[in-house]
Length: 325
Ligand code: CP
Picture 1 (cartoon, rainbow, N blue to C red):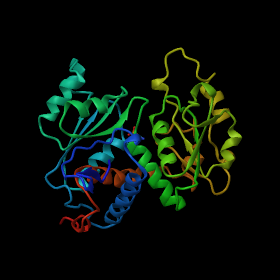
Picture 2: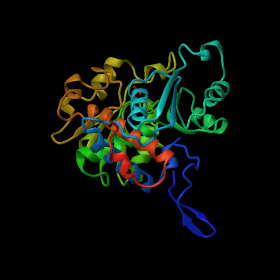
Picture 3: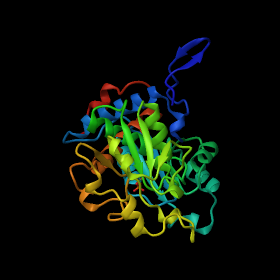
Picture 4: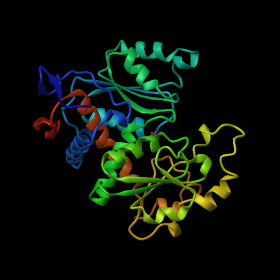
């Protein structure tokens, strides 16, 4: 997602319909992140009004295709498109011809025949979003592909941290739990690095990914963090019979994030859905330290910003601040 390109030795803005995708945090540079977060902040102002709908993407079509369950990502992309006056359609694999064995290529090309401007796709296989970008003409947003990437989650997490803590540069984030199966961690760590923040992962060694960032099994390491980012134990992605942790009870005893393990001033995040009483204590999830609901709220305006950024060029226009009657 670059704003400028070189043509004839000169830097020029992209053509309005230049095709771009958001498949991975690696698609973004620091300027992209700053621009997206600033755009999200402008949209947040519009969402505080009584009438929340903007005319910005009127006539555009955003197609959501979900091969895996979702509450937050699917609802926020749908609402984001609606708040920008785009047409939306959501297709879930469950109940569709995917269950009759239709391939991803055929499904993408079938739905692509309706001419979506953007396809938002979640799929259990890494690389699925990139594949859809290759076989359709739409801008593609990766809404989660297997253990690989979930870039809009990382963007909404950065937005939430900036709103709550007033800065990103220099923040230290402890990511606790099941990093191995987490596309959220694989997106968040490089996103934090892009903005000058640091990360450490904490959890049982079989669930850590040492090549991602500093890693330790020692929970006392979370004491230095500004934000403790708790990951869901992804039991559905754990191979049957593989012993990642001796038991959930022992996991909770050693790595569960509780009020007693959090110091004053630390903030706690979780991408959801939470396993209350497993990786996070319910008292903490509902406490003033928790930013979980803020993350959901951020998801709407950040996804508005992503859709806007893919389909237009330049700063948020004046008409984007004018509500639709
Ligand atoms: N964080 C997240 O992706 O949540 P959903 O699975 O509910 O979309």
